[in-house]
Length: 338
Image 1 (cartoon, rainbow, N blue to C red):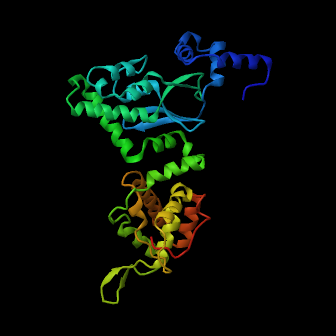
Image 2: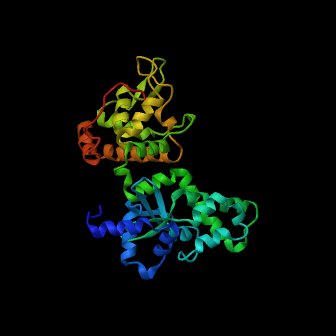
Image 3: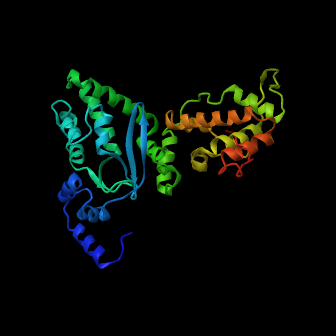
């Protein structure tokens, strides 16, 4: 917060009079980087609350979350992300205006590229950035241009990099990737959390596909001291999966996903339909093939690791509470069919 002094008030007033063009001019002037005018300007700019580096393959992209919730990439990183040899100056803008690629860049997207967001990072006075979706839209334009044979051979690296980035963003979502890279997932407000939860949830229920390996249930039978196999009324011998295993899965696999927010949404979209606790689908059928299922598999792997080093359920729960302290003391034993 700015000090309430005559000097600071005067500086703020001068900064408020600056036009957008003046802001960009000052921000790009290296010789003024430490000047009084720049510092006055920085006082009125949107501020980053979190920053970090997103790793995609061999790339490291500087990314930020602003106080108003916008997710940004640093301007210089946009050029490097697309295999442009220099990330400085206006290389990114020049590249998207070239014949071929430029024909696939919409007027609205070009306007965004021409007017980067000037903001205050955590570690310097000023920086230029772009909304995260700008990189996604540019990658899509690159692919469209390539598919239409509008690019030249020297741009093959650009196309390859665009495909890598789009593949990563399609699987996980650029917003979630930035939140993880900056640590913002720990402090999201409820609205931001709802946005993240949607990264987990499939718009339409998918066909059933096995997501819990047989070994998962074998380990459960071992730590519970129950038989691995059981015989049905018809005489068939099957893997033993008693009802309380569903309760275990709910508590130790699903609840840790975003501290219960994903489980809450799954309960809402896939409610019980009878007194027995039957649901129309398995929870994992509602998870997205990319982000949701990958997070589920990771959690199943964590739980299996803890089971393998435990001799009893009690020992497992102690280890689980230590590994997931926010969830370890909030276990549910309701009769739910997962």
